[in-house]
Image 1 (cartoon, rainbow, N blue to C red):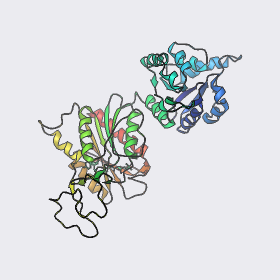
Image 2 (tube, helix red, strand yellow):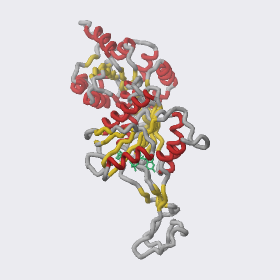
Image 3 (tube, rainbow, N blue to C red):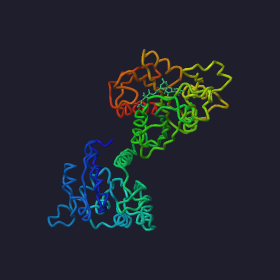
Length: 426
Ligand code: PMT
């Protein structure tokens, strides 16, 4: 998404400007062409040399230097920019932008460019919450600017409140989303599931699996960066919520089923990469099962007729519903089933350890899917927890594609490419 994109990063005079150094570096590493422009006071916090070292390009700040080249430069930058990102945006610069002022390099480029504008305000909490700043931000939003809300936390002054610049990963997500908002999924609603479900045994123990959520989160972010409205239904994972994605956290398969069936009603595509537990304890114990406990502790007595032996106790499991399979059955019903507003493209995953192709093919048919992504989870470079995946893509028309090992971000790109062409046919 960021590769070869021409991004202008405007730096204002705030203490958070040092954090913009990492942003510029990460944008440059992602393949973007980054031109940094600075206000005069930004240079009091970070020297231009720091930014030019990170961007590998000259930095522009003095609009009034005598040769007039900088003045010409601001027009050239304004014309070439694909996005203007102001990080940190101070109350002073926000006010100037709201009122159309152009008295320095940053405000002059902002006024001269037609590129989309992203502002990441960072300042003392009272300045941020001041009605003047809020009114200026509202005006800028009305004109189409994207404002990445500051985080609440400890500020440079020592005070606690809103005003902290968000993490670089959040800013990168916001920039990618901005650049992709007219992408090939613009106007589409998609639902993605990620992570593994956890089925409680008692309040402290559960049955789970090794899904990290990486595959599903990559799918959600790729769809976002192609313009989709993304609902991400996620089991418990250690990943941060992606910027601009509507995240619904769930714990169990039953919760995931309800969240999925609710979210798909007006969606164009459902991609289920979550590892859903096929079984759950018949009954979760209300209290922690103690080591020496001599009874079935929460396990239903009717089912637990077997004697607990000295070394353990039986754990009774029952089937969880098949979310994707159940959907296929419900969609066929004229009454009582799920009523969809549009044709829903359905994509499933198959986590296999043996006979991958045969198992995957039968899941595609049984769950009536448009696509099934099969991964061999016995490989170390594929499946659970890995950053890469080795997948086969099974199509409903019988075609099978064998993709090489790729980063999960690229697997996500390949999957949405196929979904986009199916949407085109729908
Ligand atoms: O999260 P990562 O660490 O990145 O790992 C990614 C992954 C290995 C979890 C992912 O690539 C993957 O393979 N996900 C599907 C895992 C799985 O549950 O496979 P399955 O063969 O058991 O299920 C087939 C399909 O039916 C899946 O789309 C699954 O979401 C769905 N399913 C399964 C069980 C169930 N009760 N309801 C379902 O809808």
